Length: 350
Image 1 (spheres, rainbow, N blue to C red):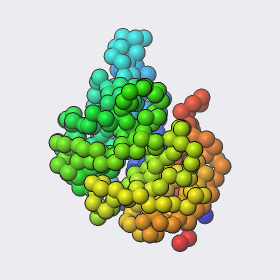
Image 2 (image 1 turned 30 degrees about the horizontal axis):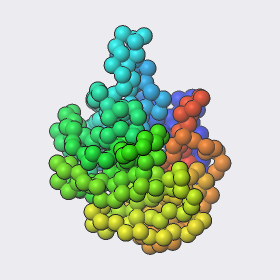
Image 3 (image 1 turned 180 degrees about the vertical axis):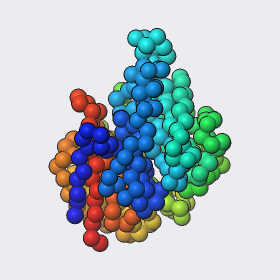
């Protein structure tokens, strides 16, 4: 059974969601940050005035400015996105990264990281250690940036990433020191404009970001979904590249936290995996485009498929998080025209 909740009026509907427990979920949308205490059935605003204060201080925000959220506990969360200065407000500093963080679920701290294009990914590996990633300029073919904070999320430190790594799309950590990131690839030789046109990279660190190294290079693929579990198992979904005719791109699987990868074929009917969320190796959920949600109980070897409701249309982005096995939240945002978001509580009898 799939139940769809629509956002209207004062009811916040998040575009990206993180659920640290079976019942408590935090979500971010272009309007602010919201919380649910019933696994996504209903939501209440917790942070909306912060965005209005930022607009008064720095100028209008980019559309879809809150791009990702990660919560390590029910009261510890980090939200990332982008902000842009405006000459009409007298503070034209260009684009910058935006970080909202809380250690108590009530008071939120704002950090503006200037001189970068924006932030798209975040993962909190522990209550006091989080990583955020994005691009060094608004062009996501430009070099990647990854920051780490282990001081209550108030101080963010730039880490050194491989020269070939461009904009960071997904961050996943299996411990406070071991993380994997999915990035675009900096073009070599002929310049190809457009996100992902030059391929995708997987990079990993085993020392808290002191050294990141490339562990998978997919020159013909676009970045897809990535999920890593507490037992060092990772599942990486690829998307076919712009010049790639076949839509059936194998999954990549790692059993050592992203250090080594091997291919795993998938049914031709699935096509690509845009978003993946694994609670364990025997329980993985994934999104294929905007039409299907799938579940695998055997590390991605086979998948059961359900059709998503047409209410999602053709959104700019979709995200997936599953607070329990058999109950997932599928959320979407449309950044074009009138800004809107949708969320579906997906409950499947297993």
